[in-house]
Length: 374
Ligand code: T4K
Image (cartoon, rainbow, N blue to C red; front, side, top):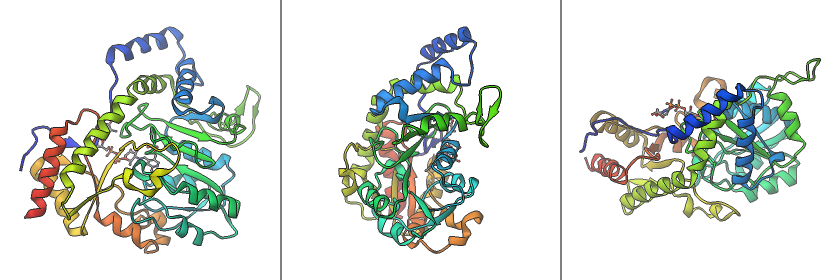
């Protein structure tokens, strides 16, 4: 087995050209305007709207994805409501609900995509349910048509946690979607979050909420917070956006290396979004944000995780293990989602990022197969 000289991490942030970033900093220095709806933020919003093919009136930027979710949920009137969601996600999805007083009700995931199953979600709906929050986990598409039907039938909002799905073309679905621009994502703004919403009237409401809900110097209309994106973040986002085609291409190349390496290897199942029936929804193109593989059982996954770390200097992650319902704040639902529990115990996300070479990805795949042979 090959031991890498330098640690290989599950992800590394894309870094834009430093000279170009410095030129942007000079503009910020000249403006002497650092946050509070500055000119670079406005430019970033404009470019994002173009990139997504969405009017600027239907997007809003935030300091991070978690606060974007929290304020999005609040603006949609979900405080004190029941919200059906998935346990197979990062804690932020449910934390954002709990922090506004909503109650996450967990339903199980689809065994192929590991996204919330509409059938399971439907069974969890009660008269107190006001919304369903599916997650496009790993950037893989949920059954958006199935959720649209539930939205209509039960009169509930469909709000996607699309933290992983930037660049995957899913923004037209649901009442709202949240994209995370954290550096562990394929596209980032150091930290950041974006809401895309169907109802343009939300833009003003969200602008208010992310700025303490103050209006002018003399009025405060609600209990808002400080969730504003600053100018340096916006500049990083603008610079990274220029590189999106290259970032997406490099991810596709790495995914293809893993796909080829594991083809015909029964002990490792690489989740391939291009193969899901859900992928046929309008606009979807895989962004290969993560490279998740499933092993046959928990013991094998743990062995691969540990040996890659100790023997190969390769640091994979067990996203998303433990399952949310195994954490104290959500333990009220422990044991209720067996498909998600099983996936959490068998999944491993492999290194993938702009700058990881195809040769290194191939070597990691070979190391995994050697560990499995032992
Ligand atoms: N919804 C979902 C479904 C999410 O996955 C997330 C965030 C959110 C909502 C909330 O969005 P944000 O509020 O974060 O915008 C990471 C991220 O912190 C988190 O953003 C992400 N999901 C989650 C899945 O992963 P950790 O604790 O695993 O990150 P950490 O620090 O261990 O970093 C992972 C790897 O990346 C390490 O090997 C180190 C490397 N790294 C990390 C950073 C930050 C770098 O090389 N450079 C860096 O700057 O949570």
